[in-house]
Image (cartoon, rainbow over all chains, first blue to last red; front, side, top):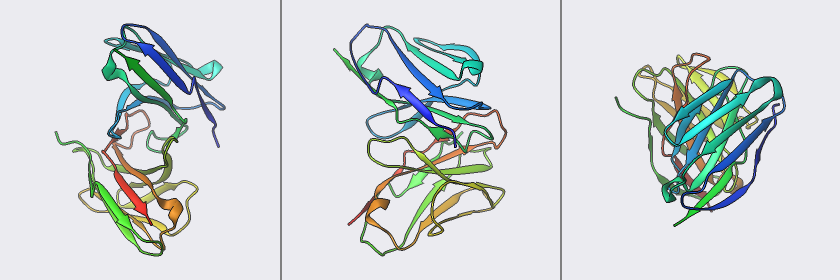
Length: 109
Length: 113
């Protein structure tokens, strides 16, 4: 099956700093999503981005499908951005996704 | 528009028992997927239900089974619980199309003692 590798595994930032999270995947995919899991376990869908670039406020994401990687950018980080960020990929519908092990982000005030 | 809801939020069982977890999909979504998330890991795909039929399964044994009802809600059943089944169980709904976002419920935290 597809392998998904996320880096870095852990990231500690001061409030206001910018960060880049990376997701590498081992095979061609038809869907790719980024999620934020808050401290209460809720997974929030940030982006559906199998290719190209999208922006939503302070967050943006870029997927280069031909090179099998995706990047999530967080600008002007806030303490509420803390949590675990997951990349999930799949070859059929989005419900059958393979997740990476996540990047744990801690934003300090 | 209602989101994905799961019940119960927490559950404690002993080894060998059986458990049923429930999920109501987001309105307008006919596809439900179940995931298991062990501590410190990403969610792992268990199976998916579409129009009341299983539509794909991950690497989980047959003691993990499910149902989907005509209103698209779903159940996950686990028989003969093992200690390693302790995890957060997440339900996600989607419209079933290939280019759709996945929306998750808050999960059920299962502890097997």
